[in-house]
Image (cartoon, rainbow, N blue to C red; front, side, top):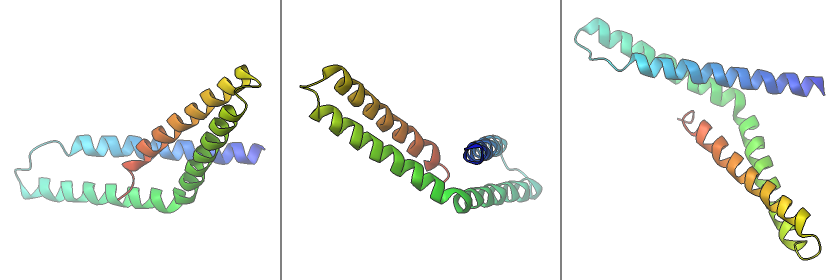
Length: 119
């Protein structure tokens, strides 16, 4: 259990590092390019961003896929079971529908966060 927690925390820290570096790099590219040195510096910065995105995609593509699959499966199972047992136990059914909606929102947030990393 501790190994899974460590892997998850490592994934989150690496994602935050990549996200922060990507934000900082795109902010640095906002100026005008008046000399050849500025253009070369911008080219190197863009190349660094491209390599960072490729590194992230190679390293975590399966993790992202499993997280999306987990959210989709839980959304379908919780919402469907909530609808099926609504007449017999409305409190549990509404909780299942609510949690299914939460997984749907989590999936949307997950897809939105990782969309910028796909080239």
